[in-house]
Length: 87
Image 1 (tube, rainbow, N blue to C red):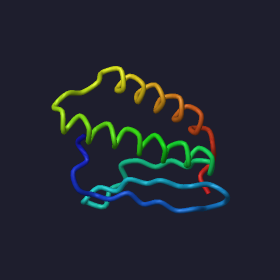
Image 2: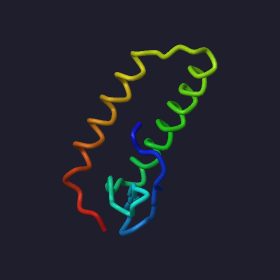
Image 3: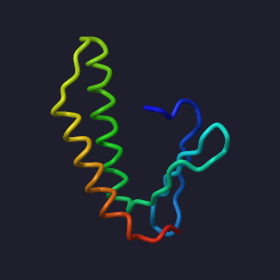
Image 4: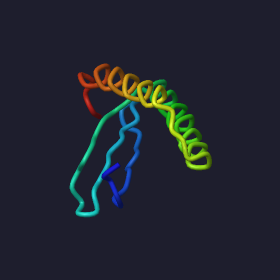
């Protein structure tokens, strides 16, 4: 994925869940805030696709249609949250 090392920082501020990806060099790579409902949906999607990734590692295959689902969901979530203020 290109994000070897680093860390995810997650916090709750002003009725929002804040996500931040920080590189090993302490540079901010990603930042966003989600409503609690969207954070729960994202957690479900992350779990779903993590399970699928583990299954594909076991079988040695990947399902391209799942990749398309992932991209479209990410794009729609990003556009919905891009105009929400952080904190």
